[in-house]
Length: 338
Ligand SMILES: Cc1cc2ncn([C@H]3O[C@H](COP(=O)(O)O)[C@@H](O)[C@H]3O)c2cc1C
Ligand SMILES: O=C(O)c1cccnc1
Picture 1: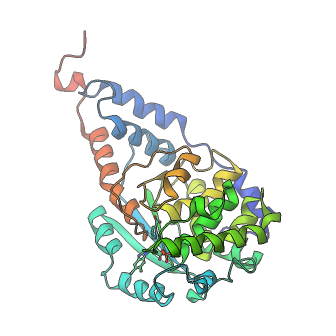
Picture 2: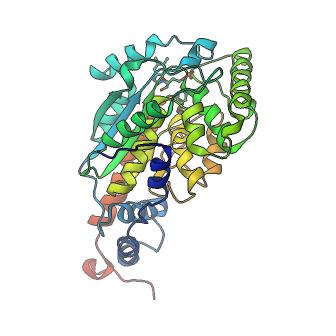
Picture 3: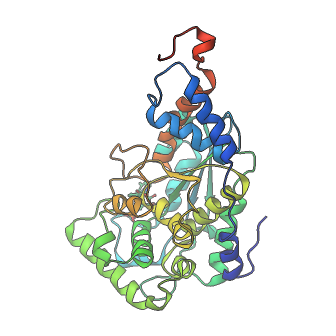
């Protein structure tokens, strides 16, 4: 398993990323051009096949082994009354995942994906980021390693998700720390805060931003101080997937925020990771724009768990099926344009 002795070692790993296979991408584009359809008429399906091919390094992309990895963690900042739900729900939902009763249990099945849930640090909470750094360097790095170590090398597509009461506050703080703006610019309703609750959440984030001001400009320090264990694991899994040639689907706001420090270090670092679904959570639109991405889907979900990522899998399956299974003009005896 990849080990990181210190933050500099992790930073170095983030600085040496494979570029993907331009040849595999070009092969897909060449084949798209001869399939029985007007050029470009399959829109995003054509682009997604090329994207999968590049990062899988396969001229014909495949989705035989799709995995949903959900990282679960708790957060000290939940003590600040920033979520309508108590932290005990995190463990209760992990139990619900195990017996197939959660939304992601159903959506992973529909996607034809294996679902795995990883509990971070026995669901012990991090420290309250509005009072001190959420994690020490060791705790942060072990969480990144746990994420990296959870990615099976033979995965064709990795869907990432999270569970952790209070983590929309963490994700908002992380975005503000990375990209600027006050708490109010990034804080949303999460699981259902009212206006007063959102204002309280924004104030907690502002306090955290003042406290961790000196870390501004250092994305991994921001992730350590203003992040959380399941978010660090998502960062580690996203990084490792790049190394292993596994394309990634990021779920909603929390998941995208978790991977965002990689983008802040290198704007090409998330080229193998697509935002699967635009969450209805307030900050997600701005975050996706900041990362230069248009989410594949926008169905108004605001759940997390990897739900949006799993929902995009059938679209990718359609993309692969058309690419691999359609006939060319020559094979089908269809006249191409004059
Ligand atoms: C029953 C239940 C199931 C969930 N599944 C995902 N989340 C989502 O809500 C939480 C974040 O929202 P906040 O920051 O407002 O606490 C995370 O656990 C996230 O995955 C859930 C939340 C609840 C209550
Ligand atoms: O978009 C998300 O990730 C999200 C939104 C609300 C609650 N939990 C997660």
